[in-house]
Amino acid sequence: MSGKRQRRHFTGPEKMAILRRHLLDKVPVSQLCDEQGIHPTLFYGWQKTHFENGAAVFDGPRRNGRPDGTAAKRVETLTDKLRRKDEVLSELMEEYVTLKKSLGEA
Image (cartoon, rainbow, N blue to C red):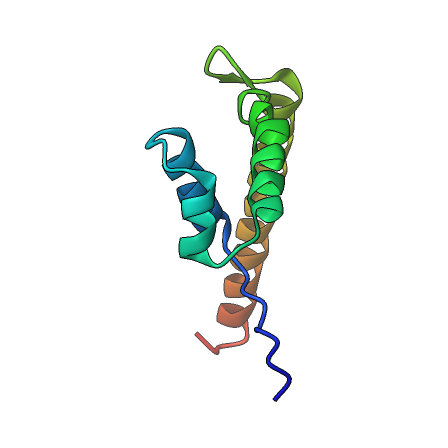
């Protein structure tokens, strides 16, 4: 064996829990890193990513609780398309049943 430790992969929620302990519970970075077996550089990288991407949570497609115009338009288009598909399927099934009855298979 080489004595090299196997790399551990943390999930997003695990990273957030570690960051939260530092930011809210005021646990020192050195203590967290010792507990988790990580290098402080990794911790600060997670923190940097968290702060850089944190604003994205507030920049979603919703404004004032309503979807933006493009999302609403897309939903409307897809709803119309689904309704037309259901109508066509209904007509085809009706024709199929009529044909089966005329052939005496019903």
